[in-house]
Length: 583
Image 1 (cartoon, helix red, strand yellow):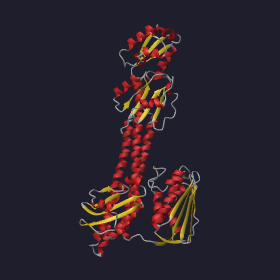
Image 2: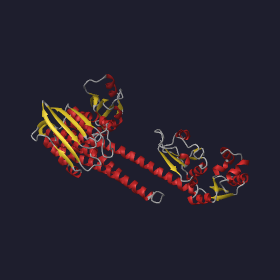
Image 3: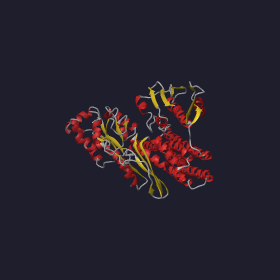
Image 4: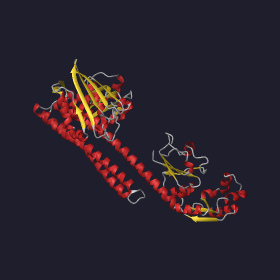
C-alpha cells in the first residue's frame, strides 16, 4: 500500500492546512479536522480513530491544550507524531507577532473561526447581543490573522466587531508561515519513509544473501561427485540439511523418459508427472516440486514435502531455485562422465567446477553492482537534500547509516567471491568427503585459530577441558562447522556490546557416545529466543546474523550424526548447549 500521511488539526486552522496541501501538490497528504474545543474536553483516541482515513500509514496531530489526554496511542494505531504548539496561533504567524497582539489586549481570530462566528458564540453560551460585555472584560480589540484563504473574512470581521462593540484589526499573514512548518514536517516524513523502505529492502537482501552463502558452503561437495548417484546423494544431503523435509524424492529423466525410482504416494507422483513449469507446490501445500534442467533439457524432478517449518516454504523455494542450476550442472556433468575415458574424468571435473564458479560469479557481480549503486544513491541523496530545511546532523546521520549498510552488503558479496576460489581449488582433489580418524581437540584449536583476531579484540577467555589425545571417526569439516557456529553465536550475540567474555567447551567420551558442553557467560536468552534458537532464519540481530547458524548445527547433530542437542539459557545468565552423539 502506498504511503499516505494524515495531518490532524482543529477546525479553526483546517482551511490553512488544506490550502497549503493543495498549493504544494501533496497528493499523498490529507488533513481531516477535529472540533475546536480548546481542550474542553481534550481529544480522545477513539475520536481521532473515527476521523482517520483507512489508507493512512502515518499520522501527525497539530495542537496544544486539546492534546492533553493523548499519551501512548493504541497498538492498532498507525505510527504517530504529536506536534505540540506553544501557542495555537504560532501555526499561522510568527511567535513575536502573536505575543505582541496578545500583550496589546487583542482577542485572536482565524478565518476558520470567523466563518462560523455566530456558531462559535453559541458554543460559548452567548447570544450575539449579550456577548459584547463578556469579551470586553478581557479584550480591548479583535485581531484577525488573515491567511487569505477566505475572501469573506474582512466583512465577517467587521460584522463581528459591530456586534461585540470592539475595534477590529486585520493583520495579513498569508500562508508562508504555515507552509514552512508543514513543508518541514512532510519532508521529514518522506525521508523517514524512504529510509524505512530502504532498510527493509536491505534486510531482505541480507537475508537472501545469507541463504545463498549457506547454500554455497553446503554445495561445495557437489564439485567432487563423479557419478549421478553420488550427485543425487549430495543434492539430497544439501536439501535435507537446508530444509529438513519428511519426504525427499528424485525422479531421474533421460531423453524425456521417466526412469524407475523409489515409490512415492500416488498424488505426489501424479503432480511430478504433470509438472510443466520450473516449480509448483506439492498437493499437501507443505513442500514444493522442482525441475532440474539445463536449457531445454529436463534432467530430473525433485519433490520436497512435509517441511518441518512450512511457514518458510517460500524462502525455502527461492533458495532451492537459486541452487537448482548448480544441481543441474552436477547431474549433467555426471552423465557426461559415463561416456568419457578414465583419463578424461579429471578434465570433466574441471569443467564442472568452472561452470559452478561461473554460476556463482553472476550473483557476485549483481551484488557488487547493487552495493556500488547504493553508495551512489546515498551521495545523490546528500546532494538532493543539501538545501532543504532539515538540520545538517539529521541528514548526515541518514547518509552515514546508508553508507554503513552498503559496506555490509559489499563485505558479504566478497564472502561469496572467496567461495568461488574454494570451488576452483576443489577440482584438484576430485574425491568425495569421507569419514576419517582425527583428534577433536586439534579441530577445536583450528577453529579458535581462525577466530583469533576476533577473540583477541573481544578479550574472550576460552577454556577447553578436552583430552588432546581424544580421537573419533567422523567428518572433520562437519565438526568444524559446528564449532565455528557455536563460537560465532557467542561473539555476535552473547558478547554483543561487551568488551570481555568467557567460553568453556568441555568434551568427554564414554559408553559409546561423545558428550560436549558448550557454555558462555554472555547476555543469555529469553525463553522466547531459547525456544526458537534452532529455527531456520531466526536471529535476534539481522544486521549481523543470517539466522541459519544454529539451525545448521541442529541438523548436523540430529540428522548427520543421529545425536541430540539441548539449549539451556536464561536472560543475563549466559548460554549452555549440551550435545550427545553416538560413536
